[in-house]
Amino acid sequence: MHRPIPRRQLLAAFVALPSAAWLAACSDSGGQANAQNATPADPAAPANSMAAAKPGEAPKPAGTVDMAKLLEPGALPDKFLGKADAKVTIVEYASMTCPHCAHFAVTTLPQLKAKYIDTGKVRLILREFPFDPRAEAGFMLARCSGDNYFPMVEVLFKQQEQWAAVENAKDALLQIARLAGFTQEKFEACLTDQKLLDDVRAVRDRGAKEFGVDSTPTFFINGGRYPGAMSIEEFSAILDPLV
Image (cartoon, rainbow, N blue to C red; front, side, top):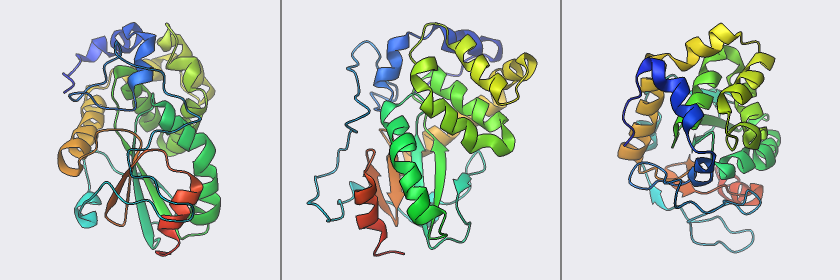
């Protein structure tokens, strides 16, 4: 598991992280991604550990959970898209440095929003599941963005290669944060907020311990656990009978 990083060392920790670590950021290995043994993850071919479904057939869940327990409040208030009283709730656990999560956010989420979220049928909750300090930093900046949480997440996913895979992550993230209205002082205050860091890690730990999350993205729909960046067709096959 992650060990707490002292408050004043957080910035240095994510700046010093080897840039190759982002390639391992979609899977868990003993609680933490192993950058040295990572193989490149192709965002155009999302990982999916579920049994392959036939065209038009809903994929089978890799397990089940108690949705009432899953939706109980955690260390941080849930951030969600859609109506609070939508008929179906999707809970996504993601890592900001995971290429498969970025693929879902850039490619599939807009279709999911148009078909289900913006029409009031589905609510999507995004929960933090960082595998490395850079992912923690990305989520912390999104949380510090207040009402701009999802716009910040969207930008970080769209520009993932420009900050997660570079040597100087601090400057790259600062540039993105400034476009979102951060001053350098606010940026550094956010990334040295030990309470926020602890809460982000608590969300991750709860997902792993209570709900069996060990890779990202992982989706929970109607009690089913679906690991992997599913296509809009797979989502539709699951959601249409529910909405």
